[in-house]
Image (cartoon, rainbow, N blue to C red; front, side, top):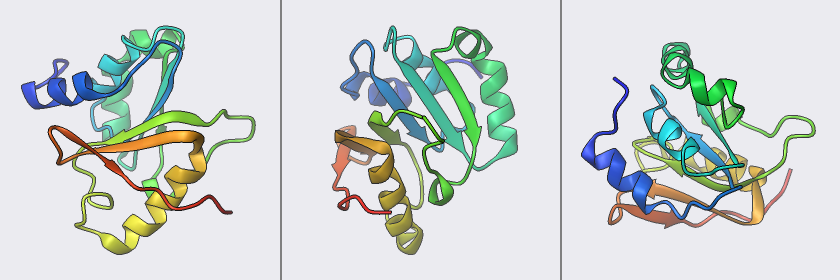
Length: 145
């Protein structure tokens, strides 16, 4: 499936996207939201991470054009294991939709994930998740290794 559901479209529309931004999507599934973000951050980049090899393969197929163009990349990694690669620039914005570690369903994992995301964002970076109207900001912990 290559099209955004009305719910995902509302979420992508609510993201404070600007050209040139670096965006991180946590748990991107088949990549439809990341693909829509890639179209809106001209000159920027979106990295979609997901723990599922099946999701990563779907995203690679669904967003092959954006990946080839260098505006999108995907990485198979669990959110609680995510960290910037050597020489990888931090992200301006992170978002997640239906991620148990961030929506309260997995609080222990949530603490780890929040720290991993905080460490991967710029000083003014934000994390937005579903569950607001349609999004809400999550407060990030202070940076540390």
